[in-house]
Length: 168
Image 1 (cartoon, rainbow, N blue to C red):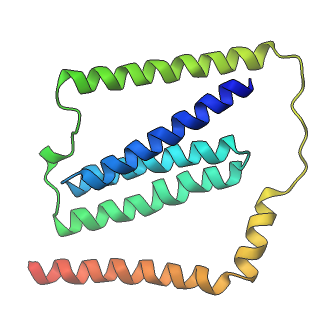
Image 2: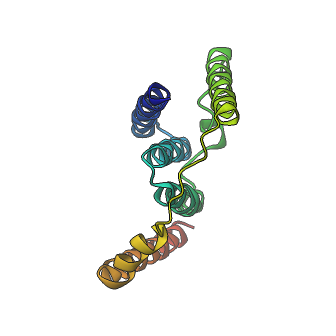
């Protein structure tokens, strides 16, 4: 099972690097944002594999969910992207590669499920409160930085709205 996790760690690491490179090389901001979402999902998988489930879930909810929705909202508000630029996989080779990656991931998921069902070892009980270990320093020691970051995001959205209104 160790080889299984090691393989997936390197797989998601390479996918994160490839997605980050695709993010920086896209001309369309909408396509770049979608590649950034893929990078966030790969990083979340890496966090979960390192036994940091809370950080992995927060990575998906906060970054891939909320921040990217705000980013796409600003891009659409500024009208920077064209709908025809969104699709990166236009020809049959890209779709075939995407389908093959999907089949490989499905096969790995089924292998993991089969190994989990056939193992007779009960999962180890961990009574650690993961949320408390993250929330306590966040809302005591780093509260100022947390609030300043939220204010900066709000100011950035207001600035995008003001810039968009000047154009029209």
